[in-house]
Length: 278
Image (cartoon, rainbow, N blue to C red):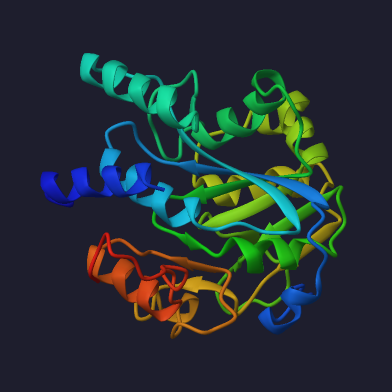
């Protein structure tokens, strides 16, 4: 965890301010600035992970895409402590980027099902795509939306296919680092008995199983090598950082986050000012 003083500084700074659909970054500038679709990114995390949420708000708050309307929300289960109710109420008032599900906090005992199945009921709008992402993944929103732009808006399942060596998006399922479903599949999860009766086990594997059993997701896309685990973290699922990255997973330590931020020059838009000397 960051020291409390560093966490406070982060808050202050924020207040100041076999198909591979990936399209090379050199082509991004050719797109018009009209929003063509919408994407909800739900980052599944825990209520007590205050420092991580504030840090990720910095990471995603300075990114945008001319192609898509992108909303980033932090998702966790019912609050269990009085301090959570106070501090998270402050977060909601300030940022309005939190979804609290009616569940007990867990990883592989139904939280992801509750997330997807609740969205059609609790959201005041629909999205073309919904993403489930981990809080240890770094997403580059412009390359991500560029890769989604040409894809179907229905019956679509997108991510990093497991097993790691597989290039076939139909064998077997998309890694929990971050996968995307089109809205019709989210509605199907909310209404079908298949996922409702099968919620215990590795959540990413379960989603693939639901779609297979329901004969859903005819449009499947695995985006390798643009999505991967942090170098050296996970055998064939990881490789060195590359310019055309969409997602880097298993970024758990602060030195790893700093390495990623530096590699992708995330702070390149910072302009000289008399207010600071960096």
